Image 1 (cartoon, rainbow, N blue to C red):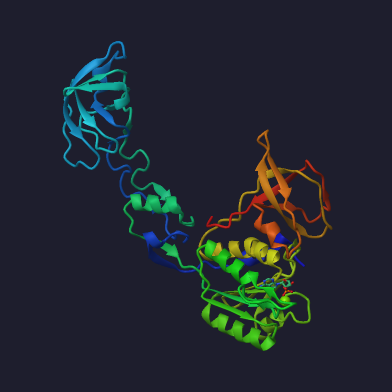
Image 2 (tube, protein in one colour):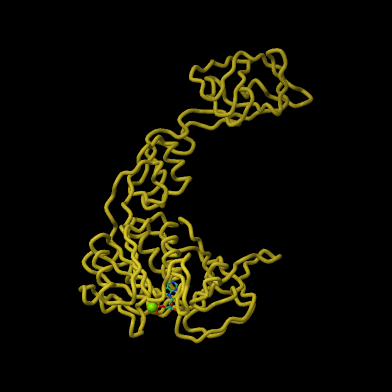
Length: 407
Ligand code: AMP
Ligand code: MG
């Protein structure tokens, strides 16, 4: 049995970045950027107004206040999108709107809120400093400045910034082709009638959803019985079609747990089996050339927590990102927790803040590996260290915020 960190390191060592491809910007959400984007021109591209108001010269408005306003004649107007821009003359004003190009000779914009317009003239009621309310050309990026580094996951603001730079397509790394094999005699699909001894197959749904939440649709999904031949058939097909194979169930020590035997038969090299974590001890990881095999335990909480802790970081590394799992805020335990020492336990918890603004964490009800409700109601995993067996109420613990969403 190996420790969690060692298991993760062993997995990540086998993850080789997948090739790059070009996708339409509108379809790039959730991919990992494969090129560093640099500004080609100054951003913003031209001086523009940050407010609705009047383009002025600050030197024309010395000592102005609401008691001593200054009256300026309006000699033109410029609104967002106008491409013919009037020129400002000394002692005059031009009406301007947010986003409009700043007229030549302007060095400040007087806000509409501090002025009064009447019959083509405007009284300016407040002093304006040089540069005030002007978004300057190149103030965010100069040509050649890096805007976004490669390796970032493409999120809505990344798409926004790329669009603002004029990109229609973007270079990303391909996503892995993933096969999912769910194993267990007892499993039936939701919607069918259960006989005693049977249960609904929740892992298919939960793991497919977990994959989709990071932007991946498995290309092959198969549920099989605890039967060596059927498992072999499914795995052989999965190896043909995909580069990452995830099986769920049938990987523990029981006499009907055939995944390891079949993988060995198929020449898959075991990297590890069993990790000192709870839930998720009977985790398997193996390789066959460049094909990667994750054998997740079937207990539904163990399957999802293992996916989150071991599979997700691996997929992101394949896709070119170095994103690790979430942040680990330190929180105060609201209750005593205990366990046997020997495994790192991911206690399902609810992280919140108390009246003093401190993080407080409370384990959810139902902490056994088959109790999905305890995970469904949690927003974090409390890290209960391997060597500890008791942590007292009020003590500080690390708790990782869970985000079943693209991160
Ligand atoms: P296994 O890993 O096959 O030994 O299964 C461990 C436990 O998880 C058993 O109680 C199984 O019935 C349960 N289990 C396995 N696969 C699933 C599944 N797809 N959905 C719900 N429960 C499952
Ligand atoms: Mg089983």
